[in-house]
Amino acid sequence: MTNQEIENLCREQKEFFNKGITLDLNFRREMLKKLYFAIQQDKEKIEDALKEDLGKSSYESYISEIYGVLEEIRFMLKNLKRLAKPKRVSSPATLFKAKSCKIPCPYGNVLIISPWNYPFLLSISPLVDALAAGNTVILKPSAYSIRSSKIISSILEKCFEKKYVAVVQGGREENTGLLNQKFDYMFFTGSKNVGKEVMRHAAEKLIPVTLELGGKSPCLVLHDADTAVTAKRIVFGKFLNCGQTCIAPDYIYCHSSIKDKLISNIIEEIKTQFTDNPLGNPCYGKIINQKHFNRISLLIDEDKIVYGGKRDGASLKIEPCIMDRVTFSDPVMLEEIFGPLLPVITFENTEEAMEKIRNLEKPLALYVFTRNKKEGEKIMAEIPSGGGCINDTIMHITNTNLPFGGVGESGMGSYHGEAGFNTFSHIKSVVNKSLRMDTSLRYQPYTEKKRLLRMFLK
Image: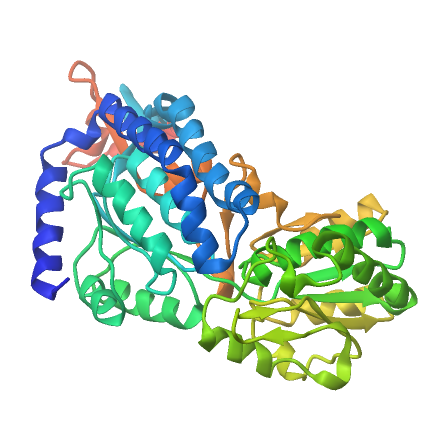
């Protein structure tokens, strides 16, 4: 799509929004229902696309992408009236007699830029929130997940007119064309480097923005952890989507006394969940493309592998790989891995381990494994992170009642459920003043009024 076509599309969407059609809650409901049934109808096509792009099995595609979108739509249909209703708040005596309220209003024309690792979920879930809030949307899916981007475009074209919801496909040129437009809100999910570029463009035009980024999410495993359960849940969270998950456990930081037992349990779990031959397992995913396959391969230290790590360039598959005796200065610890490599680092003192994590960039997720409830809650409260779990991994993202987002370099802003509706809404403050009653205290002349005002405000 050319820059002129993008500019025309933005203008058409702004004109459509200004007609006020999207303010009608019945219109929003009907559009969400139409999307819901279209997804149900094309579920197998979506699964096929995810299989081709990322090697996902039908079951993994449904539980990790399709189900989350359908659940988000169900939440909005059930709660839309409550979310969109003006909220009354109390008024101070200085406003007597008046009513004060907070009114959720759509921003207008919204740009959503989505990534390739969960191309369906991370495109459609924020789209649902934006439409529920009453906006028009231009969606820019990733150029890497080609098949998924095509099915997304096909579904949305069947459901909506382009002046309401449109998909812009393409690469860097289209991204630049979109970022040069004056949107009313921008929502980006992806890497930190691209997020900086999105924020730079937003800042130049004073556009509010949400950034969903990533980072190195640690698994802090204490000496009293149940290593068998810990291993099962880490293996699930780490190797789901072949490690290409923004909230995947990036590395294990465990007490030295349980390291050997934990690694042994993890190896057993990898064999249980992915068989002895993950590269030949049709339910085990693949790396998105050759560029990322090469990048991840360079992070593998052959001398530190204790399990796995075999690679097949033809299929773009990398075995789950456990690396021991890793330090924070190793190459694998200097960037977000975003692949099936699991470094293990040990500590002797929990407080020192907490201090180490606090001195690193704030992660998108923090995972703590311990039998001590108070200790787990203390660690979660004292280490900044976007979110996380105690004795589990990644499952906090499945609860629509919990906001999802980062902090610091892992992102800003949040969405999902009510948080998603609020993200795409401006909360307008309104005072409705009575015409019958008034006080002269605020009007000129002010002679002799200061003493009366102080008495009135006591």
